[in-house]
Image 1 (tube, rainbow, N blue to C red):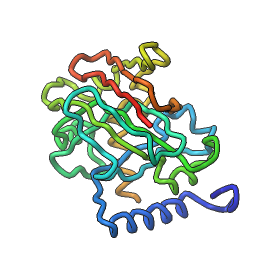
Image 2: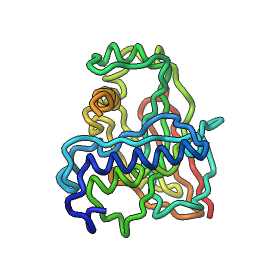
Image 3: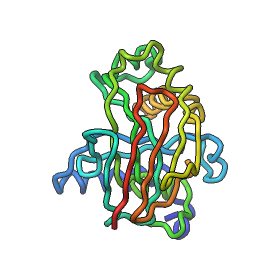
Image 4: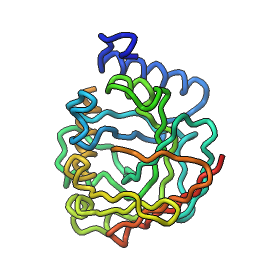
Length: 229
């Protein structure tokens, strides 16, 4: 979009995304939740952003896993990449301006997940408004076992301390720390709630691969994913 229309702004992009959302609702899809993108501040200068972006997750794209393993078809996805995620489930509606302690009271569970992101821009070359207009690059969300929030003594700090290893076909290809997600997943959620009121580098996917994660917190199960054509 920005390559053809340099004046295309974030406000324009969210207007396009809202129109696309209206079309999906009209054809019978239902919103299951939202994703937060650009949570790693270190990449903001690359894409000219100064805040996270967000986009809807759909009943047609989200799947609650029965356990910690899954097979997923890459059919219909454009240049898919894999991003390990932390997923929250709400039991009450949050409000803008809540503290993280208050926000925790609105949560029922937390889970580890895989998001498969994809893009229609060649070679993943884009600017922030392009990402928003392209559904925030959301393709699929696979949600692992749900862990009740009451199993955490201090949800925010414990999630911020989370460490993860990503394996492809049995070999560790990357590792990361949840603290880079806007200082922690719960902080990212709080910022998203505030942004809604105001209204990572990822790995390429190919059919025939097996992906796994190892997490430092045993309460959150690592996931295993096998891709097919």
